[in-house]
Each structure stands twice: as C-alpha cells, then as structure tokens.
Amino acid sequence: MRHLFDFDALTMEEWKNLYKLFSDISERPGDYCDALRGKTMASLFYEPSTRTSFSFQSAMLRLGGGFFGFSDPNSSSVAKGESLKDTIVMCTGYADAVVMRHPREGAAMAASLYASSPIINAGDGGHLHPTQTLTDLSTLTMLRGEVANINVGLCGDLKNGRTVHSLIRALARFPGVCFYLISPRDLSIPSYLRDFMHEAGLRYYESSGLEAAIGQLDVLYMTRIQRERFTDPHEYERHKGVYVLNMSKLKNAKSDLVILHPLPRVDEIDPEVDDDPRAKYFLQAKCGMYIRMALLLEITKQGTLVPDTVPINRSGRVCKNPNCITAYEFYLPPAVKNDKYCAYCDKEI
Image 1 (spheres, rainbow, N blue to C red):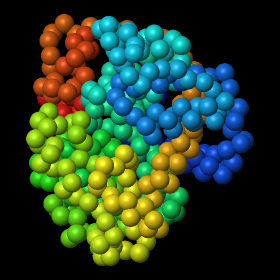
Image 2 (image 1 turned 120 degrees about the vertical axis):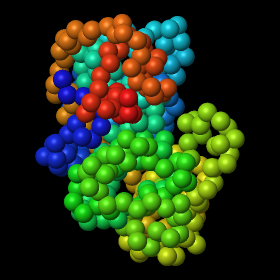
Image 3 (image 1 turned 45 degrees about the vertical axis):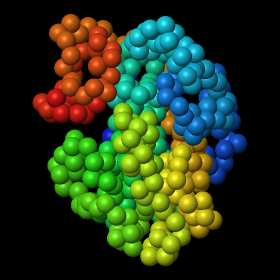
Image 4 (image 1 turned 180 degrees about the vertical axis):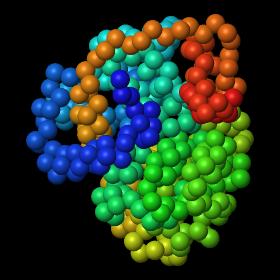
C-alpha cells in the first residue's frame, strides 16, 4: 500500500498530476462536493494542530466524506496505555485513510506496518511534515509558475523544524535551487540532512543573520523557534525572538519576494508585514486545504488490504535517538537504510 511519509514517496509525474488536480479543485470546488461520499478519514492528532487538522477535516467534508478521531490523546485509549499498533489496527478497520500527527519521529512509518488503509504523515516530531511541503510547493508553483532556479531562504529553528526538513528534501528534486540556511549555530540543520544535501550536491550557504541574505532571496520561508522541542526552558528563552521579519528588513528585499510561513507564528513576523503584497502565508494556509483535498482523492483510491505479518522485536533497542518512535514502542522491528540510518527517524545509528 502507498503511504505518504514524505514528499519522496511521490514521483515527479505524480506531483505534477496532484498539482493539476489542486488547480482544478481550487478553481471549481463545487465539482468535487460528492467525490468522497461514503468515505471516512481517521484524524489522529497526538500533538496540537490548527491548520493541518482543520484543513484535513475541511477537505474531507468538502469532498462529501466524513471523519472521526481525536485532537488530544488523553481523550482516547492512548491515555490507558494503548500501543500505537493497536490504535492503528483498530482505526484502519474503520477508516479509508488515516491522517496522523505524533510527537515521536518515525511514528507514521511505524503506523504503516500495521495499517490496512493508507497513512498520511501530518508531522512526526521534529522529523518531517510532507503535507505542509505539498502546501508550500503548490503555493510557490501557483505564484511563480514553476519551482526552479530560485534562491530559498529558510530562517529560524532549522534543527527541529520538520517543515524545513521536508521542504529541503523536496526542493532537492527541482533544478537550480540554492538554499540560504539562516539560524543560530545550535539550531542549524541536523547532521542527517546535512549529509543528504552534500550527497545530493545541493548549493547552500549558512548564516546566523537574516539581513545579510534577504536581498538575494526569491523565497523567504520563516519559521518559529519551537518551544515544544526544547527540554530546557532556559534554552528556549535564550533563542526566542532572535529573528523578527519587519518592514525595515524588507526594504532590502526583492519586490517580487515570496514570504511563506507554515504557521503558527509567535513573534518572528511583525503583524505590519501582513499587509505587504509579498506576504503569502495566509494564502499558503488556504492552499493547504485544496492540496489536501487532492491528496485524499488520490490516496483513497487504493481501498484496503490485509497488512503483512510484522515480526516482533525481541532483541532490544537499536536506534539511539531518544525521540525515535522505537524508544517508546518497543515491539517495533529494527529497520536500517543505507547501512547507516534508522529507517524510522533518519538519525545515524
């Protein structure tokens, strides 16, 4: 069964077809109001969400389908100690697709091992967020006509920013993209992603200052410093507010700069920027609903199946990443890719 853990699950031809469907839905949404009538989506959000959960729910309703789920695991049997495996086996028996956000890295892949219907990763810890990447690419393609030969600035918490990680991996598949990685040194991209960029031969520059890079950018992708990823609150306090985009900084930016943000914002974009025609983050959020409509239409075509038998891990922990799903769901079988990285969380073993 095809699941969506990250953008690289799609071929470029599939991406083009998905964007074409997105364009048609956004122009003629009424033509799709019965497209998924009789279908059901499970919405399992182990972490807080506004745009992702609401846009998926709205997408399913606009397609004529229904949904069930939780936005707080404490309101489900997870609070009683139910394993991820049991939750997924049960929910995929009820639903034609499962949209899941989880605080542990690799949770979506782990869920797919036991799923009889497709799993859509709506964010797994600080790892990946592919449907936000679909949103970002749809917005950029709509605004620019194509995603190629552009300078992209990624600013903020690049270490824990799953939206950034997914976007870099996706943009690597488009020609002529140059990256400007703007972050404090201790919040720079993780080592596995740096290895990926080197192996892919990507052009990138690293900087701790936004002002020096902003004049070079075609796209500025702002992100917040993520309080929930810090174990030490003092470290969060030290980093918050380090980058603030305001009209003064935009004086040095290109007139056709595209400003994106996965949202929510905290203090990293001054509200006065909202009225600048270069600010596209609220349009970006709306595009997220339409591309998720397109994704649900395509991924639910698969129907259901009986998953393969999965061996139970009895050999002990393999991945050393403390936030990997395997550190919490001990029955999961070890999985390694490229003889070096954990297949669940991408961290080096």
